[in-house]
Image (tube, rainbow, N blue to C red; front, top):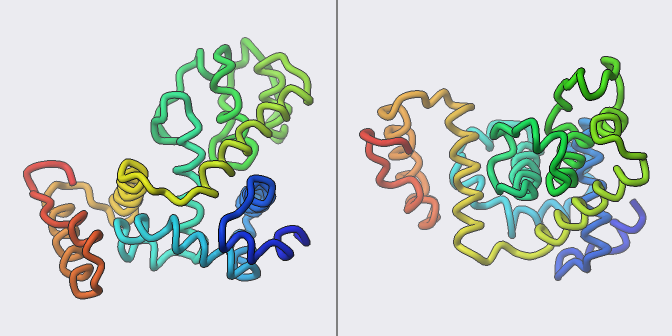
Length: 233
């Protein structure tokens, strides 16, 4: 934690890879421990940097469904999106993962190790491959599924954390990344606000387009408007 505090000013300008890795490690650990709210309150400069560079597209797309949630909700959503980006298929973190990816494809192991280690995904049961116990740590379960030792598992994990830090230390300059963040915010909103029908989604988007225009957020307004009821928002 001393490293994070000492390097707060550097983080605000452009975090180095080692500083970014330290911060990402702490963010992930706080998420797993359920203490992310407090962690962010104690490190306001880092929270502001995340808001300035990464969270605005999420908040603009999700509207009050994130504003009304606990303060760490946008950061949790950002982490879920960024962890999902480590999947070799680049699909959403919640998208189905095949048996062969879980068990045999080594290219998937860094992303799966990180997702399971930090509480984003449960380790599925493959009893014919490994029989663990109910309260067994994710690391132990995955070592059993993959027939690897702890040192190999943590190499997978470290590789994923380095990639995650590299991604988040760089401001999302591409339109593709910003649109991906807005899509993640939209999916969150549809879940939280119960937008099950095309009509409900269109009404919700129209209301938020008007609110974004009033707030001077033209990008959010363009994202929300128009969203016809005849197709998925």
